[in-house]
Length: 97
Image 1 (cartoon, rainbow, N blue to C red):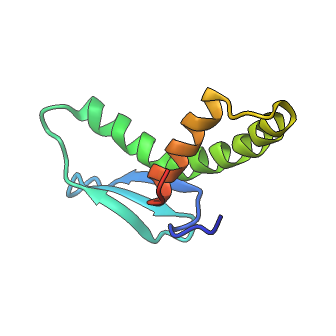
Image 2 (image 1 turned 180 degrees about the vertical axis):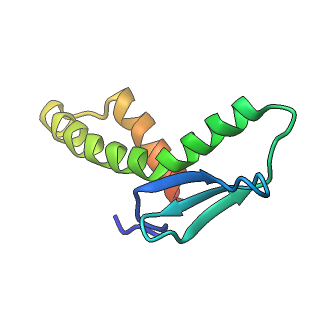
């Protein structure tokens, strides 16, 4: 599976002057940015952490799927967990599940 996104890890950073949230790669390149959510700063932080972890979560799902597929082959059927993981990977990569 070839990645069409910027490789992780990603990090979240809030600019203290503007309040803008930035998601960056290790080189400091901006992956995404959002404007501040003055009405709910806790949600803002949670969203930033989730976005920053997205590349790690995708890599974990891809690794898990490798192991799930070995078990599916052994048992001769797809598992519900494998289907959920395949759908999540497809959503994250823009592919058809």
